[in-house]
Amino acid sequence: MTRREASKLAGGTAVALAAVPFIRKVNAAGNQVNYAVIGTGGRGQYHIQHFNGLDGGRCVAVCDIDDTNLAKAKALSKDKPAGFKDYREVLSRKDVEAVVIATPLYAHFPVTKDALLAGKHVFCEKSLVFKPEEVHELRRLSTERPRQVLQVGLQRRYSAFYQTAKQMIEKGTIGKVTHVYAQWHRSGLGKTWTPPSWRCYRKFSGGLTAELASHQIDVADWMIGSHPEFVQGVGGIDEFKDGRDIYDNIQLTFKYPGGQKLNYSSISTNKHLALFGSTRTEFGEMIMGTEGTIHITVGTDNEPATAIWFYEPSPKKAAEAKGKEKAAVANASLLSTGKGSKGLPILFDRDLVQSSDSFLQKELKYARLWLYRKGVMVPEEDRNPVDVQLESFLECVRNPAIKPKADLEVGLADSANVILANLAMDEGRRVFFKEMEKMGNTPAAPARKA
Image 1: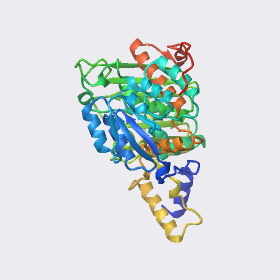
Image 2: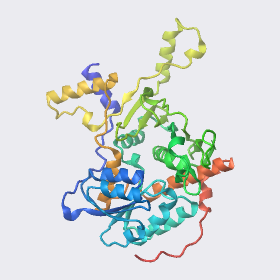
Image 3: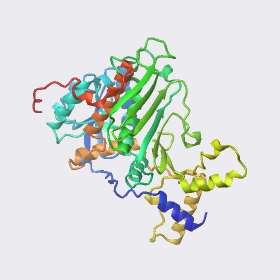
Image 4: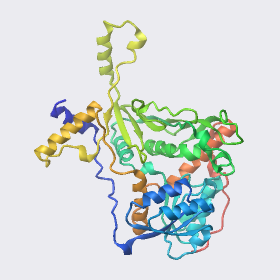
């Protein structure tokens, strides 16, 4: 590929991230946020590990009813926090400005409610709430306390790749988004989520829809730019008959007001992912537009986030390809498919050739673009979105003018998606999202002042 072709490729695929706010690091000890982690199981410990690598915050307390988890969290944090078994003791401490809530789902709302009433800023893992009445009550409570930060753990909102994909959609790069496909296939899930784990029971858990699908349903809402009109689906307990009452596989279809659809799959018997040439497994999303398609997945601690996109072959190009094949191929059904396009990398601003670049910088960028185009290497995010979202939370606490990307309304919409999708599978019917307006919505007295 020539430099001119590389420049054209960069111009066609890159979307600058200049609009993405820079997350400022604050090293001054006096400007650090004192926070507590409530719920120190697997997710809580994961967050503590990531906080250890960030500036701007100090963990002063950890809380869990399980002695083993509590001991692990105290030892894991670089800040040597105090340990508590009753979260109300944590909330009563004047030195705690903010809390990170990573309890089981059924406890999210009670702890979040008490934290807001205690005047604390809140980062709560998804799903934000568990029951319909909690959607309405938390909205009322949070609206009464506009100066308190409430952020939800939907880290894809903080990924540079996902933000770039959203910008591409807004710029019309892939045309009008009409369909989204998303999956989270995790083989062996039935062996890790086993009774008596709280995740296995409806009394405490939203099952696969809450624990996995919630991330990706939020991606669809974000990329499509609206919330669903209705959802239908089917689930079953088909493989793991061990006393659990949550489904071990689910298939969901969400229909949006503009006719767009999200098709979602989560199973626990296979982890194959057909995106990215099957080089990744388990989870990812495909965003399909009238002029192109994006394949995208978030990173983990061991694997980078990645994203590629495809031009939608135009009718002219498809006709040309069909004409060339006519002489050699007589199968009309094959000819009608046209010729596909090759995946292109989604590029960041740093990959663009600038007029201010030195000769050597330009040559290096051309070389990198060539390697990207050949599939020898792919662009990678500089940081794990989990780090970015936690750092962003601390920054929002320090500066009320900055609002979370995954805020109250994002979190409540995501929770409603989960609740209604589970209802659709349980009742075997099409569930409309306007039903949430009446579900559990009873007048409540104003919350007491902190």
